[in-house]
Amino acid sequence: MKKYIMALATCTLSLGMYAQQNPTTIPAEEKINNLEKKNEQLNIFFNFQSSFDVISNSLTDQTEVGFKARQLRLEIKGDLTDKIFYRFRHRLNKATNAQSLDNLAKATDIMYAGYKFNDQFTIVAGKQSQAWGSFEFDINPMNIYEYSDFIENMDNFMLGANFIYQATPTQELQLQITDTRNSKMEDIYGDLSSQGIEASASPLTYILNWNGSFLNNQFQTRWAYGIQTQAKDKYSNMITIGNKLNLKQFQLAFDYLRADEDIDRLGYATMDGADYLAAHGLTVFEDVTYNTFILKGEYQPTPKWNIFAKGTYETTSVNDVANYDDNFRKAYGYSGGVEYLPFDHQDLRLFLAYIGRKYEFNKALPTLTDYNTNRVSLGMMYRIKAF
Image (cartoon, rainbow, N blue to C red; front, side, top):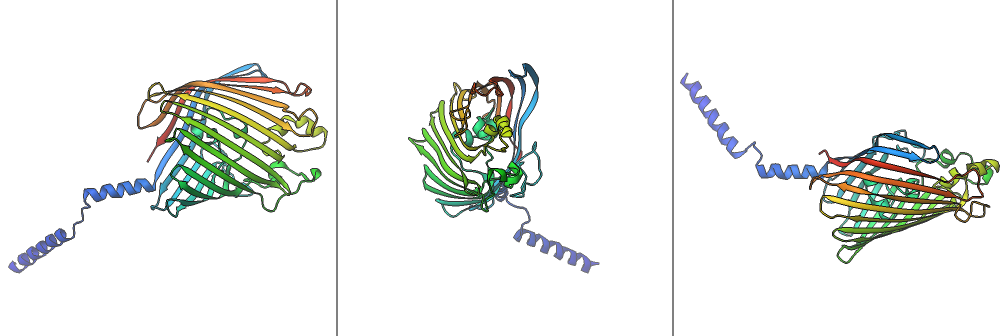
């Protein structure tokens, strides 16, 4: 019996000494470091905007009242190492069927991985937002009440690669090459052979982007120029210029966007000209020019309040087509409102906003009638940090 007691005591003593030499409890500092590393690797957000709306349209002479969720996007991103990062963003209220060119759903805005070679050179590959300029384009969609027609009709989440050069801490250049479309040309336009239009073997977009900051970040730029291959020997040239005065309590941004399209990619000229096209056996307008001007001001009387106003002016011309050239379509946008941010460390905004639009058409086009829309929205924007 004494032998068993001595053996048990020896075993217990040995285990105790081993435990002291090889502790299984992770120190608190190491736990914190591991948690911070995990947080860097995995960040989950829900981008949400919903409101109670009162909407009127002069064409229907009706007023609609109801609740609507305009934005619901799941976003996951993180830094896997000090050089490798990724980002994924998916719309939870959009169709998820794969498109015929890139084989990805339109609901998936972003799915890319990036590699940072050093402080100056970075490459991003995968589905991403095209690197167009302007500040309205640059804002998180969650914070937009209503886009200009130009940006609303852009198809800008494409598969490709972006080469980023940080020339100085305040000056960035991007060279981006992406698909021009998510789907094949015939799936968007139908058969265009009657117009002598053939699909391109390389429907790619090339964009050069400059993001600048001056005067201690008080003046900012978002400029870009790009060429999009729409079809064989058919291109779209687009320039997007954004300038912003960025003071402590006041910001003023001015954007100019222009597209010269051999084939109407934005599409709203073709939509308004449907009667003309049908009468002439055509499917889509060619040689279309779009111009858009956007001015937006914001003022924060206190850190928790933001007052804003925005105006837009847009023109559309179909060159060398009688009555459709020389700005046959003019659009005016005007909006304003107030936002309340109750929490310092939460991206939550409660808002009351008015959004108005007015459309004018060439009087020589009897099938197109001038009209206006009005909307008053009371709602919430919330970028929810879920993890």
